[in-house]
Structures are given as C-alpha cells and as structure tokens.
Image 1 (cartoon, helix red, strand yellow):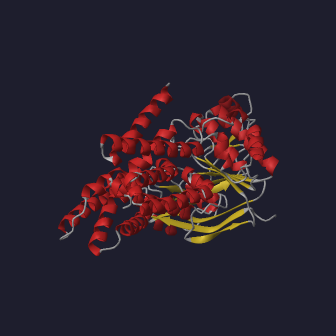
Image 2: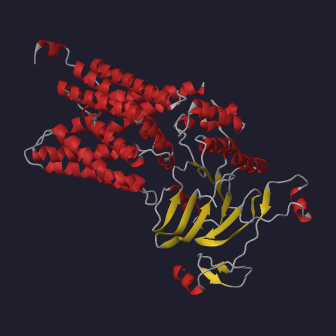
Length: 265
Length: 265
C-alpha cells in the first residue's frame, strides 16, 4: 500500500488527570474518507488537535508524509463582531489566498456572490462554506473537517455530503471528518472510527440504500448518508469508564483485558 | 527657556499628542478586536507603582515607567492564555491593588513630593522636546512592526488555531503586541494620565468600527479620530483652560457618539 498521508501510533494524552486519548492508532491514505464519531467529550477534537500538531501527545507519535499540506475547517469559529472584514479579505489572509485561488474556489462552492459581503452578515451555512473554501485554498493533500454540518439544515447537510466526495475526487486528497452523529454518517465514508478515549470500534458504514425501511425513512431520493452499526465488546459508564461485556457483537476486535481498563475510571 | 519656546510652548505637547494618536489607532484596534481593554488598564494602573519605585530609587522617571510597564506586561502575558480561570477577576485584583499600593507607597515616601494629579490625569505642560522625540521614535517603530507583521497579527487575532496551522509564529506575535502596548501605555501617561490611557486606545478604534469595512480602514480611521481628538482636546485646554487629558477623551467620546448616529442613518 502507498505511504499513508498521516499516521498516529499509540497516542496517549492526559489532561487534568483524565486520560483523554488512550492508545490511539490510525492511518489515512490519499483518496480515503475517514469519519470519526463518538459522544461529546470523547476526545475527538483533541485527537484532531494532536493530528494537526497543535498539541503534543504525552507518548506515541504522529507521522506525516513529507510536505503534507493540510486544509483544516474548524468547528464553529466565531468571529469578533468588532473586526470588520469581507469574505475576500478573510480568505486572503490564509495560506494560498491569492485572488485567483479565492475566486475559483468561491465559484466551485457556489458562493461567488458572497465575495464582497461582510463576514458578520453571513448565515451559518454560508459561513461554513467560506470556512470550507479557506481549507481548500492551498489544494490540500489532507482535508480535516471538524463537524462540518453542525448548524446546517438538512438540505445543506445533504449538499455538503455530496460535495465532499466530489472534492476528494477532484483533489485526490484524503478526508478526515468529525461527526457527532453516532448512527448516521456520510455515505461516501470509507471507514468509520468510533472513539471514546480509546478506539471502540471501526468499520464500514452499512450499505442499505435499497432497503425498504431506509426508503421509508428518507424518501425516494437517494440521501448521501448511511447508518453505521457499532461492534462493541464493552460499555462505558456515565463517567466514561469501561465495563466489560454484555452487548458483545465483537468480531475479532482486539482489546486489552478489562482489568487494565478499570485504571482510568 | 528661550523666546521661541516661550511663545510656542504648546508645540511639543501638541506634537507628542498627534504622534501618539497615530500609533494608538492601530494598537487600539487590536486591543478592541482581542478584547484586551482590561489588559491595557492593568498596565496603566501598574505604572503608578513603577513611578513610585522610580521616585524612591531615584531612577529617571520615564525610564522607570518604561521598565516597570514592560516587566508587568511580561508577568501578565501568560494570563491571556488562561481561559478557564476567569482572568478578568484576576486582572482586576492585580490592576487595582497595584494602583492602591502605588498610592500608599507614594504617600509614605519621605520628603518626596510628586504631582499625583499629573500622573492620574496627565500633565501636558510637562511634556518636553525629549518626550516628543521618544514618543515619535516609539510610534514609528510600532507602526513599522505592525505593518511588517500585519497578516500574521490579523490572522492570530481571528483565530490562533488557524494562524498556527498556517505557520505564523503565534506566541511571538502575541508577545510583540503586548510589549508594544506596554511601551505606548507608558509613554502616553504624561499626555492623558494613568486613568485615561486606555480611553485613548479604545474610543477612537470603536469610533472607526462603524465607519469601516476592512481592518485597514478601521486602523487608519482610528488614527484619524485620535488625531482629531488630540487637536480638539488641546485646543479646548488652550482656550478654556480645561485639563488637557480629560478634554482629549471628551472630544473622542463626542466623535464616538457622532459615529453611532452616522451608522444609524
């Protein structure tokens, strides 16, 4: 297999006596879409910060391919209202923010009309698109999207989930996406990783777009989302500690013995 | 003092005020965008302690002021990053206790008579040609630095996370801004006084906000508003014998109110 764009090897990170990341290993290839899911406070955003190099893990390593260009779309960036700035002005501050690049990406994302608007006047969906354009400016090898559909309506979510695989094909980039929805992920996802401190399970989203229940739920039009069935061999207590057992649908999902998990409760 | 200085004694104060306003435009805009108003206040209040220590240890007052302001800025600098601990409470405690300690120590210092009102509200008549020269140099250096690092400073202001991913030296830029703030606050003490220093930073910038669409426009308009306020304030002081520092702030406030009216219409 080709060299991975980015790899995490046995990453551990502790914050305020809480084990936020526990033995996380993952890798992402060019052209691959990985969706990271997990409950609130499970360490998704921290993992992203570590992968981006904004935080150093306590132990373990992050290995990036040489010269890797990362385009990052942050979760809910709030702009200070007293800073007057237009969309073009904002984008021109970013890396690769030349006039030509800005115009072509705004065009590609269908938001050329916003070019000279004040950032303050944008709707939530428009602002998300501008942030996506910002991430795309330098034609990244790896696109990292932190909850890109948050605060976007169903229509917008559907459009974005169709757009992301298209962008992947056009740029040939890898995509790492964070989603808070535990059961429905973008259909184009190649691999789902479910985490809660450690990686709980991973796999492909289910292919069910033909099933009757699915059509009943979402209507006749194809919807670019797919359900994901978890395969856990353990529960998490309310404080996140791990209880072995009960709901075991695990197939070959390797895990350390339950006794070691008790340590972080 | 020669005849020329006797006739034109107001020239140096006026020149110093205008030079100062040139740099408080850009610096004040950053203070407003980054919500650092309280930080500026704390620096100014702490300066009284610096003056006191200078008087006691017989160092040249301007030098004592500059040194203490820079030291204080370096001590307070890490506080900016603390978000969990409410840093405004902490800043408030530091700010007012420093002012109080300064006043108490000053009153206890034996055989020392200082013009307290001059420090608190500014003493324009005491401004010498040397002060004007110092302010001129500081203003030129600060404006030069801001121009040079404009993109980085602005990116860091919008999002430290994105700026750091784009490769801007975020920590160094923050430090640079804080040091510039410390120096300008120290030098503006004679013009507007400890209690009104942050007004000169914030009111012109706030005035410029409603009239501008880009950050650059806001910075230039803030300088312009500051210069007009200084000219108007010193004129008022000249013709009606009002205190100069407060007159400058009153003029700035009138312009701010007018800018609100312009925005509304």
